[in-house]
Amino acid sequence: MEKRTSPTLFVIFNHTLTPAQEKDARESLGAAAIVLPPPGISRLWAEIPPAADSLADHLAPVTAWLGQEAGPEDYALIQGEFGATWLMVAEAFRLGLVPVYSTTRREAVEEHLPDGRVEIRHCFSHVRYRRYGA
Image 1 (cartoon, rainbow, N blue to C red):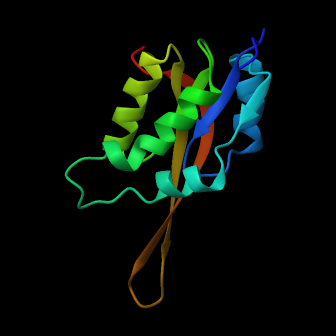
Image 2 (image 1 turned 45 degrees about the horizontal axis):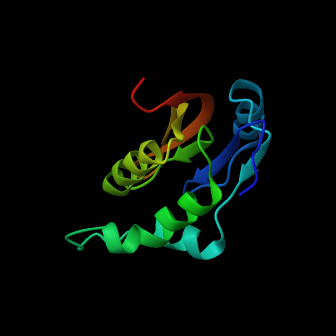
Image 3 (image 1 turned 90 degrees about the vertical axis):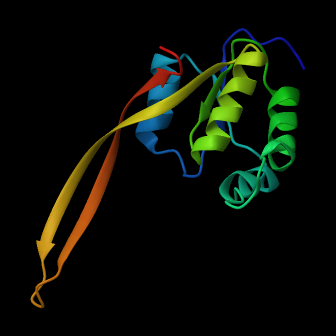
């Protein structure tokens, strides 16, 4: 891997980044590039097996990808299934990366339906990135 002068943001996330998240990554984190995982890695991250006793084997390709592609002081945006997130944040720290997550503002809109049911929609908007452990 070649030495970079600006950090890169590596994304381990189940959603597509919003324009606001991309803009904030460049402005607040100084990320010169944003790297999405290859499709196979994204699929593994999205399909965490709920019945597994351990996630180490399932996440091995994810940790290998991050270890091969990211360098010290790069950022890793890690959000998803709680246990997998915890393991990947620990791995990011071990690799000398800076793990972050996206904080959001949540707004709920209730609609009372004619049949008496209530439908609730949640809208999320990115606020900022926060370092894990801060």
